[in-house]
Image (tube, rainbow, N blue to C red; front, top):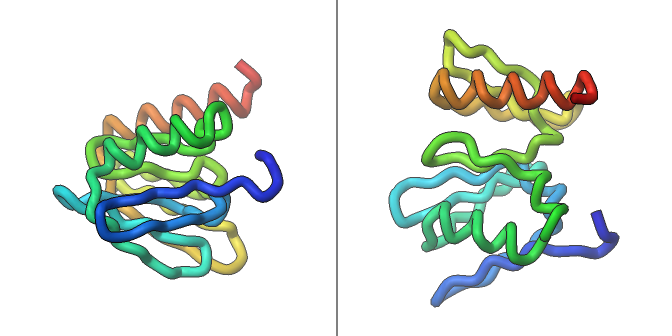
Length: 124
């Protein structure tokens, strides 16, 4: 990732400018999205997750591959995937030192994520 590169998300009332590697995940609730940062801070924005996804693609280009959309309401930073439990529908995102966030996702979404990460780990 380019040094000093930022993701800038703007709405009619606010602007968030953040280094992509500080984002652990982005969740959505209807017309709102919440950015959860590595330092634990959360920032709610008045925009839908699809808008955030398009902003990531437009601003970060191939570096946007750092983020993966999981189901309808979650975008995760692939670098923080720590633990996946498909039957319990749990995904833990952590740096294994300072923070850990557990989120719920569909079994199908977690199965696809697990398969993707296994392929990457095996160099396929």
